[in-house]
Image (cartoon, rainbow, N blue to C red):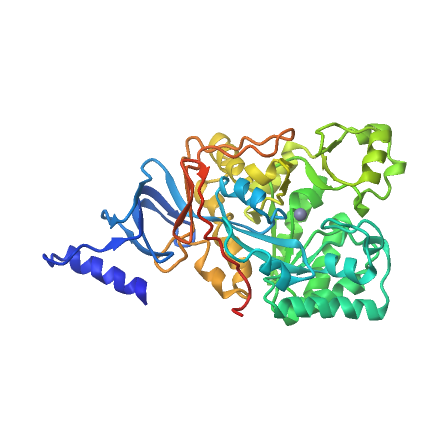
Length: 470
Ligand SMILES: [Zn+2]
């Protein structure tokens, strides 16, 4: 192994073999407080990078073609975001300045896995990957008119024939064969799909050893039914944004997920640190809007204009399409989800034409600035564990390459985030979701500097993460 050879050269040099040239690295991140939640290392170290991998984690200084001084900064594994809909340059530019080095679209996913990866070949700012999704498969099979990620009609509310369900299964199987890293589902967005249909999709996921990432419907009862259905199918289950699907029942949700885990079932979850959600205004979540009381409309903020809605402006926006931010959860609900050791941190982000939910730009810095530093609600090591090694482990049974991510150790991919624990802070707001986070001066992907002094560089080293080499 190259990394072992490099280490032995360092050892020989330190043993005093004068006359040999010193080992040098492509890049050295020096003097930082290196934190690796996998090994629980938390100490001053010098990180040597060669050929895109971490080649040394040294107590003594290293020499390199380039040296970044990370004194007074934390150097951690780059953050792995399991829930990022914004899979284009504009969103990547925001999330990378929030410390994310690998971003997955797993909840909605795609019905065309090969095409999705082909569209991103040639390099992105961060590493990227996708699930094959039941939602887009259903939209395609039933002929939904929606143009975004979610059904706008029959794909959500219609019922499928046996032949159509079999077609969806075939799309999932093909996507898994093309390297999809997981299976996506959103029963909240597909009220026309009975649990029996979802059970068929869980079984396809189980065949492929794929985790299923689901935005579930039906509150606490829906959670219990989903856990039971995944268990019967033998499918690993990941509940997306527990903070938003649980609402008032967050404690009971977390207890139910914890109980399933204690019984040996593979169930995980995630949360984002904001009290508002965001979704497409034409989705089935709002099918009952005409029966709402007047005051409920004001909880909805149109992303394109920032305006709070009324009954009439909601009606116009629903007819026109677009995205809407939904206010309404309490800070206590958000905090309960974020401080739980069960919750990985995931953004559910998406920015387009400069507009979107602040979670795209600020999720990780908000957890590190507000909940770790300002409130002392989560230890730093624990927060980083849920941003790095836990999401990597979630995928690594099906995606062997994930065993080199989420870690800061010799042999791991050199995806690193360098932040100042005293100043790291989100800055994006509901009115302007495209303000990058502060206090994260350097981000490195595959050994290349993609954020330098807080600005995105021209490097595009991000590569596809998929289940198998093709
Ligand atoms: Zn989402």
